[in-house]
Structures are given as structure tokens and as C-alpha cells.
Image (tube, rainbow, N blue to C red; front, side, top):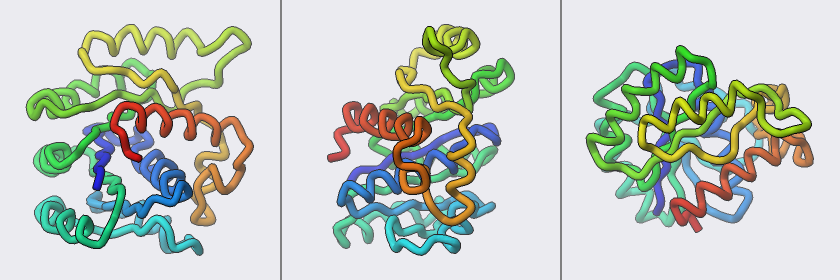
Length: 212
């Protein structure tokens, strides 16, 4: 079983949204997928209550039970576990990061977000985890490619010494609208640019983490 942890010590980075969209896409590729919701806000769990499809499973968990839960899920043939962590919970984040095969750190391209990512990077480096940063909530690309604020964010993030995913996720309405009915964007608007970006990001993560 492979484990991806979505890690962000700052709130509002889109961590839960990415967890859902990536997990649904993986489940559509015939993987047995579970989202571990260890965020006390339980946004992923509430999304799942509105969902009619049975996959992926969403399981509320705590960091203290994660290791035992992982053992049980592996014995049940789960292929991929996506851990949605809480912001501002340092100890829980460390546990979730230690158990991961791959850690994804989402951040928005604004200066305050880029500065705040340092605490998440410290966690990754303290455990020598395999990780990448993904720029999320970005302005749409223009006719000449990604906007200056996104390119400048890439340059700023280079100083952290962690790879930045080549795919940036744009702030598209379909990403949030799809969640209202318990769906993901690849189900809600499968041919949209928003869905394409999620697919591209998942393909890149697979190349890095060998999920399937």
C-alpha cells in the first residue's frame, strides 16, 4: 500500500480539496483508495456524506491510531491511502509525514503563504521524507503560459530545496462546485481544464512516487 500525506501547517491552502480530487481520480483507475481524515474539522468526512459513489472510502482517524489503521487497511488490500492532515497541528503532522511514501505540500502563490510554508518544509526535512510542493489556487495561465506571480513563486520556493511540481493548480470554480454534490472535478466536469490539471498533477505524482 502506498501513502500520500497532504501537509500544510497553514490553513486555506486547498489541502482538503486536493486530497479529495486526487483520491477520486486514483479510485477511478481501479485502485482501492481510502482517505484518512485526521483533521478535526472533518471537511472530507462531510463531503463524503453528500457522495453517492462508494469509492473512495473516507475514514475519520486520529494521528495516534494511524499506524494501526494503516496495518489494517494494508491487510484489506487497500492500494492507496491519502492522509488529509490538519493545519496548525505540528505533532500530528509529523506522524502523518513519517508514515508517508510521498508528501505533498500545497501552497498558494501569495507572499504570506510562501513564507508560511517553512514550517511544513522543516517537518519534511526532519524526517528526510520524499516530498514536493504544489502551487494551488493560482491565476489562470495566459496565452504565453503561467502568470508572473506563479513563476515568481517557483523561484521563491526553490530556496527551500524541495521539488516544486511542474503542474500548478488554477483557481477554477469547478474545483469547489464539484464538492457540493459529493463529487470531484473529474466527475463533475470531466473535460474541463480544471480536471485536466488534476490529472496532470496525479500523473506527475505517480512518476515520483510509483503509486501504480
